[in-house]
Amino acid sequence: MTWKISEMANVKQLSELQHGQSADFFAQLCKKVPGTTRQGRPFFAVEFRDNRRNASSAIWEGSSHELACRDEWKVGHFYKIRGTFQETAYGAKIEILRIRVVEEADTESGFDPLLCQPTAENDSSEMFDYLLDLVDREITTPELRTLVTTIFEQNRQRLESLPGAIHHHHAYAGGYLEHVYSVTRNVLYLIDTYRGQHASLRDPLTQQLAIAGALLHDIGKLHELDADAGNTAYTTAGELVGHIALGRDIVRDTAKELAIDAPWLVRLEHLIVSHQGTPEHGSPKQPMTWEANLVYWADQLDGNIFRLAKTFQQTETNEPVVASPNPFGRRVFRGELAMEPESSA
Image (cartoon, rainbow, N blue to C red; front, side, top):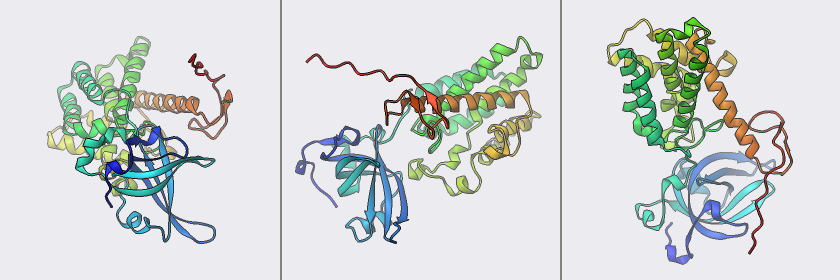
């Protein structure tokens, strides 16, 4: 289905729409799940997003969009939509009037994929360069430095757009590098703080492996998240194997390609398989080395800081206490929300 931009004034952003407003906008399909009502009526629950808002819709059996939704709409793809936006007790909703896949000519009308998905506040290219510079400065063991650098450089474009996860933390384009950047800086801080007290942390190899582990602990998400679905779904390997085992495979395969067979390689593998701490959280082994514990603590800290920040940002109510459930998993006190100053106009 096609239509001309002139048929409706101005292309808006989804996040700009007010309750009851109809407009054309570009958005990414980030969810499509079949369901059935209690009365047995089938439907698809779909969700579209831009970089600041998600809005859902129900595509009912017999609707004009049913077959296209079932057979053609792909999670992760971008669409031009004409719809009516509504704020409801169940969240933001879109009544879809017309919809089609984004076309090349839509760039002239303002389509930008980065405006249709959440993105990191920090520049991904700058974070990538910072991390590689850090590798050159801090990892002095030549084979280890080559291994880390090769994995990053071979996957630069993908890493710069990869989210940290689909749901739990840093779930936006560039979130992977933002998370890795923070975990690596946390590891450096821990080493700098405690090496004066513990001789083991003054060992150069331990320090270098901790940095390498911080950089590579989630590298399996390259194969866990589905690029064809805009990183909003798991690949088959992601579903069946998971990013921990996939990450170990990436390190092993790259080491083999580079003819690296160093004794420290098994310690680097241990960093990856243990970084989530316990079998209950997905790690087949618990952290057993200094460097593995440093990466585990640094990773946990960054994830918890992220979840706490998201909890403080919840705005469903203005109450000083945010009730559970929330992204942090328990009640938290954030105090009185700062009020926007009233306009003097």
